[in-house]
Length: 106
Length: 301
Image (cartoon, rainbow over all chains, first blue to last red; front, top):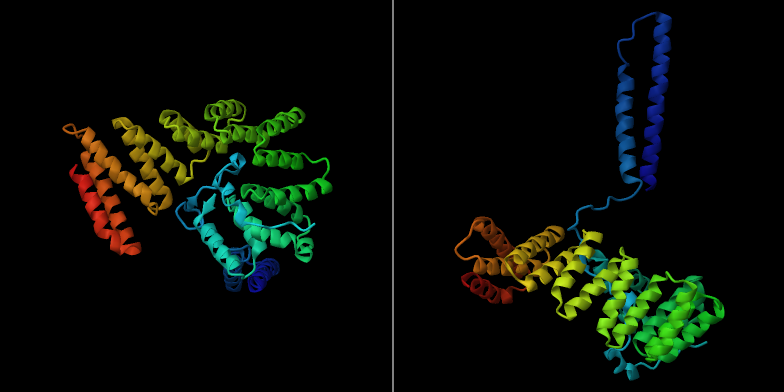
């Protein structure tokens, strides 16, 4: 968790550095009066690196993926809950009542 | 709903608690969350927590729900004294509460004094006529007294008001099945499936009812629902696999001579048989000959 978070922060920092260098490059072009043909190589590399790091952090930090398939162990129903709203008490439990002798201490 | 993971977790915790490994509170929480009925265990371990004042006070406000849980479990085990004591504690803490009043009425039910319980519920309903739980308790009283037709009548009335209550539809279906009124039960299961289409066990129950009803059309629908159960469980439901086999043989018997889609059905049948054989080979190899014999006798007939 901590590692993923740090990686995410590093990714965001790299992305913002790429933005900063792009702005600087544009102003440099204005001074030298050259045509803008494309971003410089180091900005492209930074962008790709930042993208990868941010994506990795976003996939790991918030938690694990949950399965959406109905037949995995997490989603597959094996038994229904007892319908407890309709539970009735006159069943064979009456016969075994003598076995339990417990008291609530108040 | 109890999924496979939760089921294994419950069994593991149960083992751990039974062998004195601790974790009783987590176990009780899981029981409450999954709504399974384990009254003896709840009574035993719940009381051991409640009787230990240090453990009890560490629960904070959860203490009172534990009292409620234990009191209902005690009624289920017919330890009425314990239930009474628990309710007394709750009564002292929440003197005006409707929830405690309902518990007291349930205690009357457990004692078997039906008229008094009925009276208590009626007075509670006067205060709040749309309390679903109390309506359900009145149905349960009728059922407990053996008055099944009365219970059906009350349930039908209840369902006219609260149509979205799938638990009530399920209860009605159970009652109809117990009375062998399969047509009505099938209708109820349709409602349940409509409310919760992703629960394979309802599909299975509906298919069972249709298969029991019989007739070519019902059998074909039953087969479809068995197939949808297999689809939803990934083929891990043995009953559905057997259902496919039984349906196929029954359909073949009924529609002798005019087989128009036999090829498709035999394919499904052989797939089910393969899955069953694989399953048996893995979990119970000793019973494999029994299975093959049974399936063979089905195919011939």
